[in-house]
Length: 222
Ligand SMILES: [Zn+2]
Image 1: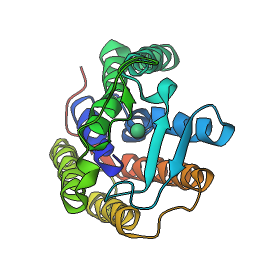
Image 2: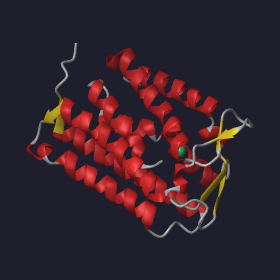
Image 3: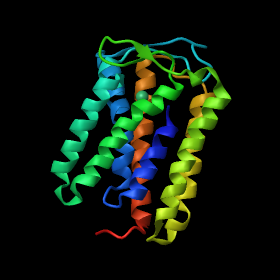
Image 4: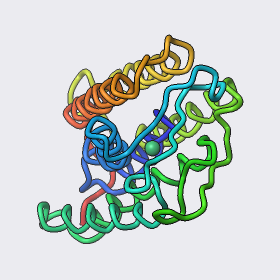
């Protein structure tokens, strides 16, 4: 999954005003950021096989450290703990929301991935395989994203003149990125896929920071 991951990110930042949207954007893709780094360094492996699924050509045959269920809990635990320590003022609930965001990645991936998500390192592999249906997987990605963004729109208000338009513009940009990734020419090599992914993840974190700058929460902080 790609932009669908950001549905839970929007929802988390909407419901817990102490967590910035860009923190949630980093949290929900944390394991994929490390996946890209692990692909580039050879710790995890994939193949690019044109036509492997209808939505993308990625045979993700070895990613036990970033995409097994057990390790997802470990990443979420470390992430929440680190957030709690670094942003002491934000409190326990903020750290829990960030941890839940990290964990949401695996469950969102479960919907679209083929059988490549291990339950534990070396364990059985699962995946519901929605990537075999290109248009349907695209609709689900957009649906999950829009549902989260709707919550964000409801629970925040402009704090800058641009804040009126920033969510709509950002959403359009994200859907365009997803369409490009689904219908555009696929990256030719695993390293190209990893580098493209890293660029996209950090660009989207930057976009989320712009939304943080132009909008503020309507939820009263205790
Ligand atoms: Zn993933």
